[in-house]
Length: 265
Image 1 (tube, helix red, strand yellow):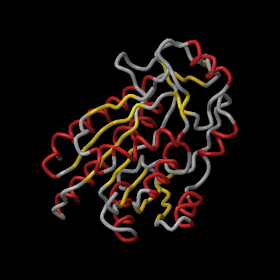
Image 2 (cartoon, one colour):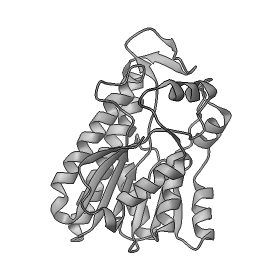
Image 3 (cartoon, one colour):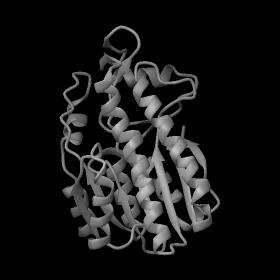
Image 4 (cartoon, helix red, strand yellow):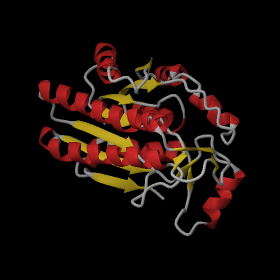
């Protein structure tokens, strides 16, 4: 891979951290964006809670120890000013950004049905303005603003190569018990597909990755049993396995792959 500069959101744990490391191994400088979040859901494992509440400094340090370049920047993506701030920081410390990975999520489980817990023990709340805001500001608004900032700066510098990759788990028939998540991810898919068409003439590809169930620290025995019983869930992936696909989509080899939701199984 020719040296590039990437912004990876949610890069303090899970798929985001693995993606930052994978891109760095390919020669990219990486800005690791993150936000410390207290994951107090009793259905979440200690490993998952620890990952979400950590910073990304250790990820950046691991990249630097291997001879790469990386910085960790904490940013609240629900703040509309965060998109420009992240691009400014990346340009000042690493160089012009030509890879954007929209991995961060304001995930919350909400429902049109009764409140309580789902089959995996996670808290489920009724849809309200607060749940909508938490989900849409990160998964839809922030993703859209980051793509817009990417496109504006790419065009302004007469860029001819760029990659945008987003992450989704939403389904065509909605996402019961995670209804705002599903709706916000549908919005991000639409933004990404539009970017694929509108920025194609500037050498930019844009795709979404739909990972399989991925062990980012939240997998329990109940989840493993669910996957084993499912007729269409095949693997429980590691973050590194998903990251390899993202890194491929961000490579020269994936020049003809754009405007796709790439489903991994």
